[in-house]
Length: 378
Image 1: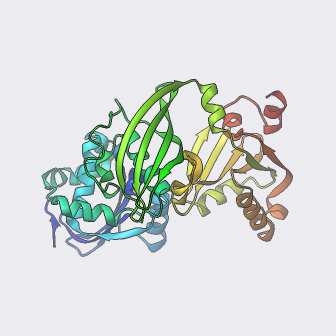
Image 2: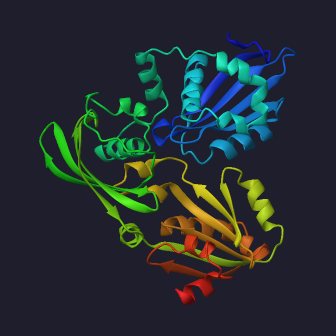
Image 3: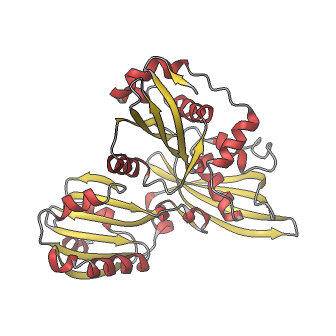
């Protein structure tokens, strides 16, 4: 087995999330030190901007401690874990490090392993890299699925990972590369031609662009029976204002509004949901619950926020807002609160709202004390 000479650790096993086409991967590595103590390391890797942007080192962790931390680091990625070899782990860490070589400086615990890490050699051959990518990516089930993933990776300037999507590895030869990584906000596909073997789509990709937005227009050929990309041609690009983009992104939001009667409710909520992403605002704390999978990438149109199951905002005014873009999600949460007697013990239900376009984020970033104050003025 491979060993970390400087830190005296012996490699036991590693697993990674099958989310490489999302541009992020979580890795859990198990080691053993000289005293035969169990060591666990958890990484969060970003292949667009941030590199190795999460690193945690645990010695003799309890099952609960390890599980909670894994959920906190990787729970929002929407993927399942697959086993990887030591050499595959090294490749994933090294390629993430190349995205931002300075990213490891933010992790104090990493200093003890830095010399050994820098001495590791990434020696996977091309066919081994392709095999790894197939392992750490989901099965592509449709043309929509393939095109959305392709656009996400191209817009994020992460073209290396697209090798599993391409039938013709020269399909991107004429692609006009963006000057920096951007985010695919929405993608709409229209079938314009097909025969027994090929589907041709017109694609409209809305991306963030500096302080505005840009609409990128493409033509994409997909092989029917494999869903592999055959050809990819950029047709045009249009810069859009925020107002134009907002019209493009409109969709209804469903909101439950409650008053919090238990001052310890948020603390228990956070402890019971370590996988949720927490964001702090002047107006309160937001917890984002993501879907357990990335099936939203197979949808047409694709929305960036399609991976959000629900958002929970604990306001300074004592309100709890629970919002979702799918009414059925909110109905399931409401039923769970009823069955768990949460309304009886911790919350007082006020009302349910539906808006024609998203408002919760705008309210959170406003100076209004309650959601009702915000809605009455907007």
